[in-house]
Length: 401
Image 1 (cartoon, rainbow, N blue to C red):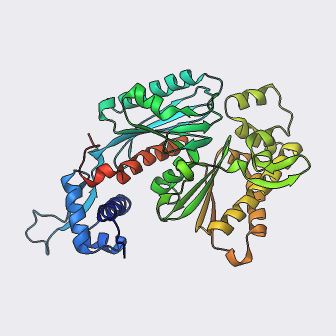
Image 2: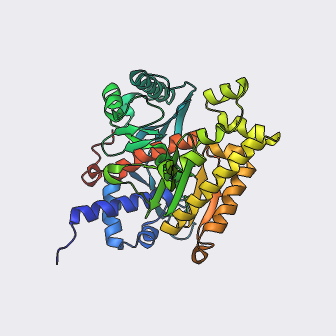
Image 3: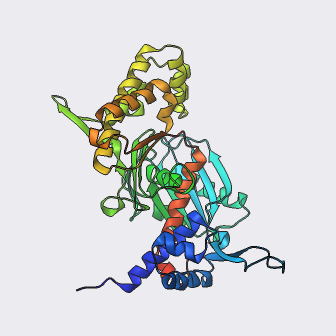
């Protein structure tokens, strides 16, 4: 019988222990053994290696100076915040939000650039991202030499492993190797990720999914994205491809294939109403859904009808996702939630009607108006995750400056 590669198993166990310390630290070795289901011998060996590499620290719980205190102080383990620093960015059509974080995911600085990118050439977009990263790093009191990795989260179809962006509403060109371009400019390892994947990891690290290892996230923004967390890891397609949920086929008719984006996408919703000068400016500034939500409150029947129709399509999609994955939690985020109660209630009602009877009550449906900073933190978490999982970590602290 073929046995598992011992180096691979060690890397997997190391990753598991490191992530458990992140989520539950300060934590004792005994508690680590219990939560990871690894032997105390394995936990001791791996934590000793992590201490040698400077990735974790020891914290003594109890006053070691107090001789009258009973028992020995407990030896607890926690992440070393200074072990690595990364930059995460949410790159959207109307703005770019950046955050520098330490190894624990704490935000050291944040920056928002309210500049439209979707009408700029690719080289100009690269210039703006480069300048934003440099400014955010300086604001954190650091230099680029202190940064271990940069991660850019964008909407569209992204190849995470290669760094190629097949298509994105942010970029005019197709098949752009943005990771290579930014890495060359900064002299810092750079990766790209779909914004939906980034905010999925953001919620797993900092938001509404910190307590679970499996969940699904749907982002309703300019594009409709999907993030699937399975066994504490993001699920990606071939080549690390992201999922453009807006391309999901709903039905075919004489006109061809009807896809989710044609019912629930931002453009499909907004084209149903009369767009005056003020509304047009809001759309140009990336605030179309927020303005649409205000108009719906003043009784705009066409817009309300479009929002409910979109909610129905999203509700059916969520029911199908639950049928496929049966996740304990489905988190819905994005600017489309600015449409308000008619949109959200339509999603809830359709979901409740469409989800199979056998799966009723399995998945908790959560609507979250996540901040831009959380999306940027999510991109930073993708970078930190890469440092956790990298083969570098199995042989010492080489990538950690």
